[in-house]
Image (cartoon, each protein chain N blue to C red):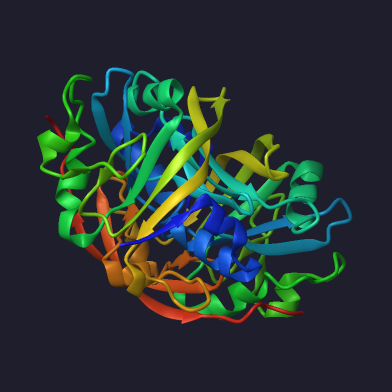
Length: 203
Length: 203
């Protein structure tokens, strides 16, 4: 096996290191986060580092890069406290990836990428109409990560919209049947095939 | 589409809710975390909520459930400051899942599950010999998540061990060629197929 030390990592060319380290942590749950600013201008951006924190209360977190690199989503969430998370399906990965372009704040990524904005009754943030699994989030806490100026944003799950045939009797979601993708690194998207579900492990 | 409100989620049966909410955030990068306590007793446990925080410095984080539910890994990391993260491949998912059983602290999950312990030169935490992509981490910070008593553990990447043919010219890692899996919910494992890598998006 090839060994790379911390010193090797530090010496790598910037894009080589970004690809390598972004891939190292494994497959990710890339999704689209929808917000608005206080003037009602919608924003849509792809985020890939989303984690389950707990089911009761239902809490989900994600990493927002430093403000300079990714300013709009975090400032909208700080202002309005509401956001949506929308699964990305195979049928629109190219449009989803395109939301990562640096559009000016007054441009809506919905218009620029051709994804369809959707407002649910009483919802304070925009959804992606094409997404078959999506949920409304309310801000709980923004934790600054001081070591690299990024943020860990924690929210509570407030409303879920999902196609009924995806939900199994025991609550398990067959998200691959909706075409939900997984991502790797900064630019790769994968489809998945179920290998196995295992029973609760006992010693 | 079916709509579930926050009140619905609160009323669900506990295991139904755990399955549903754990699946909602999407595919995850399940890996095995290797540690020892101060007496040198090794521990190996599967963790699925692992996120990339940044490439320079190379920082990776993961969610540790509340102490009562998952005490050993976090206390070992607090004591020794070192841990390994090892990709799980299709060839040993059953053994990897079995590490989630509640073994007593004096039992080594390596022995109990049949995975092979591996000590690299000067490394202060044990690796999984079967894993073709693995890295040594040093603790940077443990952030308590007060809303559900879980923890966000941040570490820096110190050493990487990887089969050379997995690394592409631009630093991208073809982890699917090593058989690395992605997980969903609390008990499901998937193989993946690359759909596409996209160019850096521009407006």
